[in-house]
Image (cartoon, rainbow, N blue to C red; front, side, top):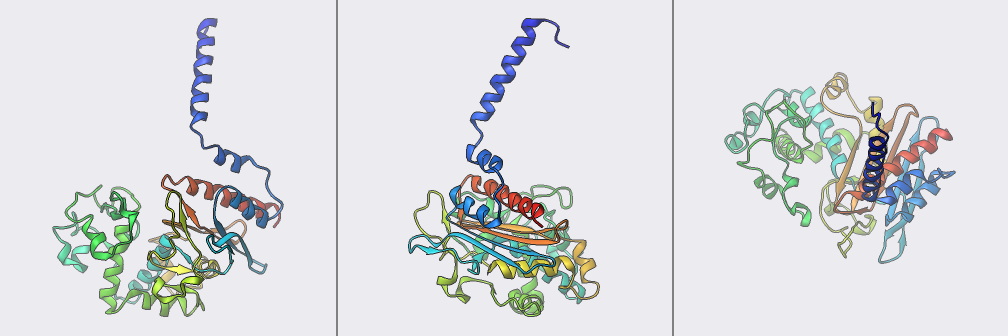
Length: 343
């Protein structure tokens, strides 16, 4: 206990100064987005997001017992002044890891892969090039517990898209970040390698397997592996703060509509995506929702059990400091609050 009045006053001054200093560094738009009165509707919240600086936004809501809801605001293409379209194609980035994890699950259930076999078993050419290759199992890679360095952490990685060989070269002969199974670190390299392992096990591209075993059974006709499969005009434009051009033409993997992602996520969470035993395998290895980021594109696919609702949100503006990522999470939480308030 501080008994001296002068000491108490000094402590209060120091606390006040510390508070003022910390507030100086708070991004005020984040505070504003958080404390603004909650809008009456989801559409008003989406429109408000554009006012916070996003060029475009798409939202899909699938709540049990209600028809799906579609929302959009801002621009589909800023330069051409084309308004945002709720059914536009979007680069879903790491949300694609959910599809890969399901594909691995199905291959494990069919006996074509084993969760307990290692990189050394499946990619022996990488022994000595990836530390602990003899101890890193498929299970550890799926769960981001391998300790392999993340290729996308390399300086200037996002400056321009590169292929498999170039990405892999960024981490070869580098020390592990931790011992296999002894830590967790989100790592794109894990899924780069898993893709190659699946291709080898199948004898053809793993996306064909995803198409046959996941997309077609769910009638997901607007999910694609790359830009080469789509009309570029159907893809929502993406923008990165400080970069002058539309990033739509940069190749960064899977594209889908918000509705397709939502339909997939519903089937993943209710189990209808799985054959017998597959759901048990999947539950032991990976998660049931995901987010994604590539330059110009932020995506979130979430399931809210208390609402029995799938919510997919797409934002077409990114920034180097991930400020817009934090802003997106605030907006996502406000959409959930609106739905909880008005079920």
